[in-house]
Each structure stands twice: as structure tokens, then as C-alpha cells.
View 1: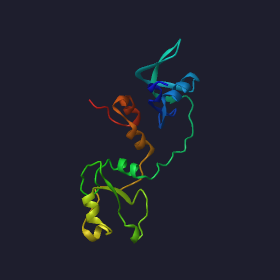
View 2: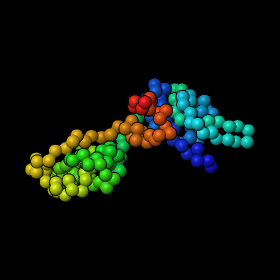
View 3: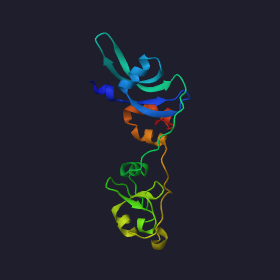
Length: 173
């Protein structure tokens, strides 16, 4: 199977609302069954014996579908992505981040999007099991649950710059 068939394709609802990403193989099937309109294409092609087609990059459903937005699972990887691998106490950026409970577990803190942040090792060590007010530390920004749109934006690569207008991202000049 060609590597082009595994490329990510952005799927939009009829209203242009970003829904999810699908693999190119599924995108081609949706296109051939006339369920979607192809809005953007990659420069790569897939070939059969008698056919050669460009791999779709952005698809729009022809009929509106009600879509129950999936919640993004709470995980170390997703917290680090949400915080962009930046310490939420000192702004240090590093791939070797820890996860910190803002309110420590032994003081009633829970594992939740609002209570977990990325922290560099020195800040996490300094904070330890204390509350922020007790050691005069502050968060850069209040943590919150990321949206599905945020998750799709994180999947964006250089080859998918055609997705930017559909994901409310500015095109870089």
C-alpha cells in the first residue's frame, strides 16, 4: 500500500466546520461515492492500472451531519501538547517536561484538565506538594480543556498548509 494512502485529510462538515482527520484511503472512497466535495489536493498522486488521481487534502461533506464533539482524552501527551511543551510557571520550553498538579492530590487535587499543567523539572521541584499561594508562584495562564479544533491544529504539518484557512489559522506570508 502506498504511503500516500496514509496521508491525513481534513474532513469538514457541510457548514465548513472542521470535524476530524481521516486517512487518504478513506477520503478517496468518500470522494468516489460522491459523499464529499474535494476542496484541496496534495501534489502527490495515487495510481491504479487505469487511473491516476491526486490525493485529497481537504474534503467537505455534501450533507450536514450532526456530530457529537468527542472529548480529548486526558493524558500526559495531550497536556504537554496543550501547553506547547512550555513550563506554565517560568515559560521554559523543553521536551523533557513533567506534569504538575496545581492543587496537590494530598490536598484534594484531582487529575483534570484544569488541575494539570506542564512544568519544567526545577519548577516542579520548587513547587513540590505546596499550593501556589504558599510559595509565591503563579501560572502563566489558566489551564482548560482543549477543543477538537485545537487537536486538529496540532496535527497540522508543513505539507498541510492548505488546511489553515479551514482551521481559523492565518496563512504565513
